Amino acid sequence: MMRFLLGRVVQSLIVLLGVCTFVFFLMHMTGDPVRLLLPLDATPEDIERVRHLMGFDRPLHQQFLSYVTRLLQGDLGVSLRHQQPALHLLVERIPATLKLTLAALLVSLVIALPLGTISAMKRDTPVDATGAFVALLGQCVPTFWLGIMLIMLFAVHWRIFPALGAGTLAHLVLPAITLGAYSAALTTRMLRSSLLDVLDQDFVRTARAKGLRERTVMLRHIVPHAAIPVVTVIALQVGHLLSGSIVTETIFSYPGMGLLVVQAIYGRDFTLVQGFVILLAIVILTINIAVDILYCYLDPRVRLG
Amino acid sequence: MTAPTSMNAIDVVEKIAPPGRRKWKIRLTWSAMFGLAILLLVLVGAAFAPLISPYDPLDQVLRDRLKPPGSVGATGVHWLGTDALGRDLLSRLLYGARISLLIGVVATIGQTVIGTFLGLVAGHYRGVLDLVIMRLVDMWLTIPFLALAIALAAVLGSSIPNIILVLIITSWVYFTRVVRAEVLSVRERNFIEAARALGAKDLKIILQHILPNVANSVLVLSSFQVARTILSEATLSFLGLGVQPPTPTWGTMVADGRSFVSSAWWISTLPGIAISLFVLSAILLGSWVRDILDPIRRHRVQATRL
Image (cartoon, rainbow over all chains, first blue to last red; front, top):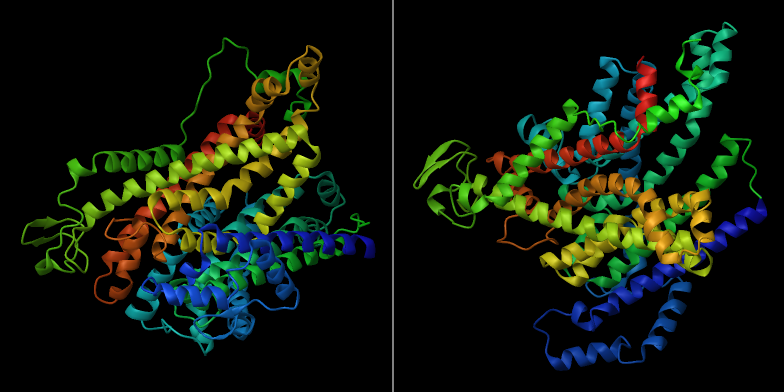
C-alpha cells in the first residue's frame, strides 16, 4: 500500500512538472510574453523595462530554471494587475468556489442517484425513457445558457432567488443547479448502466433465488457492487466542476476563483491564469490519488501493491 | 432451452457477421431520424444562409431595436425578433450556423487525425514512444479542459483558425486513449502475426490490418466529439474568447442577450435552443452510428428484448 502510494505520488509529480513546463512554454509560444502582459499601446521603453524587470531578457533555459525553482517554493508569480502574489489571490477565493462546487455536487447527486436507480430498476419502461431523456437534455444544454435561463425565470420573472452575487444560501441555489446539471446527467447515465451490469450477474439471481426480499437484494448485493465505478466518476467530476466554475461564476458574478480568472484573462494577467491552471492540476492529481485509495476500501479485491 | 443463452458460437457469429451477400439493413430509429432532421436543417441553413436569410446579419436598424419575434419593423417582418442593435435574429442564427458547423466539423477532424495517429503509434510500437505519448495524455487529462481552452484562446488570439487550433490541441487525447487501448488488443490477434510472418512492414500492418479494426470506435467517438466541440466553441464565444464580433456566432448571441434578460428574452433564448438542438442531433446520431457499428451490443439489446 505504502509503496503503491509512493509510486503514484512520484508519477503525479512528473505529470505536474509536465503541466508546469507546458504552461511555461505556452506563455512563451507566441513570442514575447511581455507583449501579452502589457497593454497594446505600451511604449518600446516600457516594454524594454518590464522585460528586464521580469527577467525575460535572459536565456530561455535560465528563465525556465528559475521558474521551476520558484514554483517549488510555492511561488506562482506576482499578478501584474493586483500587484500581489498570484497564490495569495487564488487561495483567498478558494472557499467561495469550494462552496459552489460542493453545492453543485450535491445537486447532481440529489438528481442522479434516484433517477439512475429508478431507471435501471424499471428498465425499458416509460420511466426509464423519461430518465434517459432528462439525462440527454442535461448533456446537450450549454451551461452558460442554462444559467441565463434560470436567471430569467427564477430571478427576473418569479423573483424567487437572487440573480447575482454571493453571501446567503439563496445565492447559491441557481449557480449550483447550473454547474451541477451536466454532471447530474453524466452520473445518471453512469449509475444506470453500472446498475444494469450488476443486475444481470449470477450472484443477484442467487440472492433472489434464496428468497431474499427485493430491498435486501438491492441494498446488500447490488448497490455495493455498482457503487465502485460510480464513486470514481463522481470523484473525477470534482475537477470538471472546478473548471466549470469559470463559466458559472461569470454568469452569476459569483466572487470565486473562476470569476477572478476570467477577469485576469480580460486584463491580460497571465501569471494569475497560469497559477490557476497549476493549482487545479494539483487538486485533480490529489483527487486521482484519493480515488485510488478509496477503491481498495470499496472493493476488497483490489490490493494495491 | 430456448433462452438466448443457449445460442452456440456459430449462431452468434452468423448474427454478428451476416454472410457477405446478405444486404446490410440499416434501421432508422426515431431518435436517429430526429437527429438527421436537425442536422439537415442546420446544413441547409448554413449552406444557403445568404439566399434564405431575410436580412443582412450585420445590418443595424436602430429604430427596430429589441423587437419581439414576429413583429414588423421598418424593413419588414422579423420572425425571430431583433437584438439590441436592431439586427435580425433569424438571419444571425442562419449565419451563426456556418461558424458552429465549420468549427465543429473541422476541429473534430483535426482531433481525430492527430489523436488516432498518436494512438496507433503508441499502441503499435510500444516502448519509449508509448511511454512518452501516454505521459502526455496523462498530463492533458490533468489540465481541466476548459481552463486549458481558455488559456490557449487568450494567448493565441481569436480568429477562426486559432479557435479550431485550440479545440484540436485540447481534445486529441480522447482519441489517443481509445485508439491505443484498441490497438493493444488487436495487435495480439492471429491475423497480425500472420501478416508479420508474410513479411509485411509496420506501415502496411498499421494501415491495412490495425486501422480498419479501430476505425469503428474512432468514427463513433468522433461523432460524439462533434457535440462536445460545438459546445466548447459556443462556450469560448460566450466568454468573448471565440470568433470576434461582429461575426455572428451562437455563443456570442447568447452573451449579447445577457443584459436584456428582463426586457428581451428572445435574444439569449433562441440561439441557446439552436445550440442545444444541434448538440442533441450530434449525440443522437452518434448513438445511432454506435449501435449500427457494434452489432454485438445490438444483438445483446435485441436478445434482452425478446
